[in-house]
Image 1 (tube, rainbow, N blue to C red):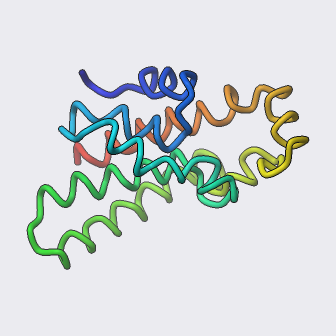
Image 2 (cartoon, one colour):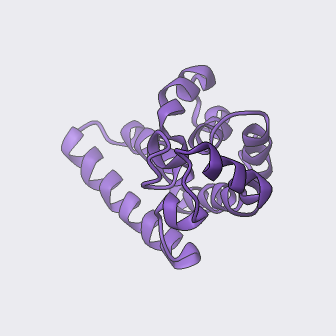
Length: 147
């Protein structure tokens, strides 16, 4: 099954965080164990452990670029350089769409507090912001992988 933004959004709605949903959506295409990937990406939601730093959907996409690159290159120096360049490109394109890659700026509420989480739910920001970030991350990673 080809990963789609709808697949990732469904995974997000089922309870996976933003990073997990992006990574898990590619498990079939990139041939990796979905449950292991969900475990590894678990701490990256909410801008990494709800620290609201780099968007979790974006960090999930970073992981995918690493998986793809590490399968194409055997030398670790090459793997790192190609992956770093792809991550810079992905981040630049993500920022062009959203104006930032920072979860805090994207949501504009504090995920670390009950009040902030309540306001995010009441304002439907998971649907309006997070799902858009997920869809854009999926689209951008597909574009970069195909180049």
